Each structure stands twice: as C-alpha cells, then as structure tokens.
Image (cartoon, rainbow, N blue to C red; front, side, top):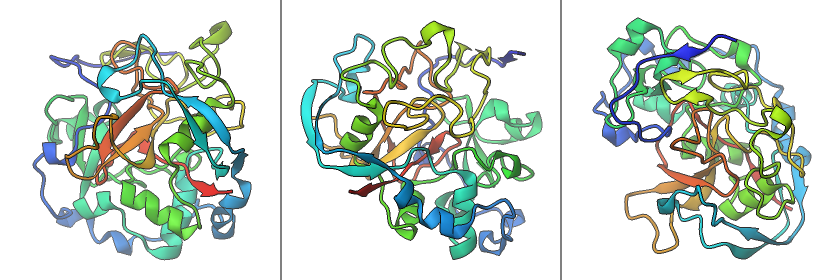
Length: 328
C-alpha cells in the first residue's frame, strides 16, 4: 500500500484540532454556500424508523464496579487519568458503534436540523485530505498546522464544497459539536454516555488492560484500530488500511460487542472536563474519549482505553464523532 507523505510542522503537538477561538474566521457562512436548511434530502440516508429505534439495539452493560483510570507509564500527566479508582456504575445501554453518516442524514432529513459547523460556515479538516489549492487557501491554526479551517466543511461535505459522504454512509459522522450530538440523541430518545459509562463499556470486561482488547497494540501482527502508522504528521504507511475515517465495524469488537472504541474518531461524553483537582474554568469544555485516526504513540497515545482528552462544546472537526447511551 502506498504511503502518504507531507511536510513536517516546526513543532508537533497533538492530533486534536484547535478550538474555534484560535482561528479568526467570518462569523457567518460565506454567501456562496447558500442556506444549509435548503439542502435537499440525502438519498443514502438510513430509514428513519430504524435510526429512531436504535435504543432497542444498544448493548446492555450490567451494573457493578470496575477499576477506572490508569497509572500507565505512557499516560499524559495533564489528562487526569490517575489514580486508578473503583467506580460503581448502574446498568445502562450503549451503542455498539458510533453514529454513522447514513444515520445522521436520516435525522437531518426528518427534522431539517442545521449543525453548528453550518452555522459557523466552516470547520477543521486534516490538511492532507484537501486538494492543494484549498489547502493553501484555508487558514492554519497556530500550534496544529496539519489542520485547516475550511469554509463550507460540514458533516455531509467533510472536506468542504465539492466533497460528499455518499460513499461513506457507513463511516462515523464527523464535524458535529456537543449540541449537534445532543440534538440527535434527544430525537431518538437516548443521551450521550457519561465518562465512567464509556470507559466501563470500552474495557469490554477486561480489568486494567492497556487497550480494549488487551495489552498488545497489534496482537499477532493484527491491527485492531484505526490510528496513525509511521511518523506523524509527515508519513503515514497506511498499514491499518485507512488515512482518515474507517467504516464502523472495520475492526473486531471488544468483549461487550463495541466497535472502534480506540482510534477512528474521538467520541463526545456528557461530562464537564476536570482533571480531579477542579473542573475547567475555560468555558464549556467537555470530555472526549477513544482517540482518532490521527493518534500516534510518539505524542498522543490516547487510543489507550483509560486515556482522555477535552474540547470546547462548540468545537467540531473531521475527527470527532459520537455514540449514544441510555438508561437500562
């Protein structure tokens, strides 16, 4: 398989996109994009009744305690993973996969919902996914130069005008903010998972394993998640088969039957961000879990099952998605 190469930034930091506040952009959508509410239906959308009935297909996670957090040698000290503590979690249900483009399309077509990325008129896209002209024309956020703030990037045209997800209907929806995820959840009678629920489910019944499947990243040489291979961000060998998102159910499920709880896309949780000392004082900042297709062991190994990160509730990018939960 061919490798993907592109220029290195001066100082690599992390795969997560910058916040909207880091980039000066027009406050309204550019006029050439039209009114998002006028967009026609998506012919590849999933059946509405099927999507709204997803709670009946959610995986049941039994009540009980588990050991949350990690003292892993590779943990990121500022993330608040440690100490390991026993957390008792009531029974709940959780999606086996992230919400897909086809499922989100059913919601949009049924309700006319307009995402925050559409209201802002732009979103963050991983630069190597863009045509050179658009890459050069789009703003580069400070500190994360592999991202571009792209006019018109949104859930159904994830690389900006001219792109679409017709052939990615079974990929996780991206460019969705916390509000967008909560609106979808309300529509189908579910909610975002709490962080402890997410980690208990992601562990799949394993106690303190490094990954959702055990302690080896590639047991027997088999890739178990969609993350970056090679030297981030200059070279991706594509050993796992993907540069960007992979279809849901691309890799084996964990012990509870959950797919892609490591890599692929970051997943929103409902919790306000805290590192254990105090909650964030920097606006409405929420927890996200699981890592994404841009995570790499050299700087961001947050595809480990205990790893955590944060993002502002309004932020959206091409590597953030969500799965839903419900009370038992």
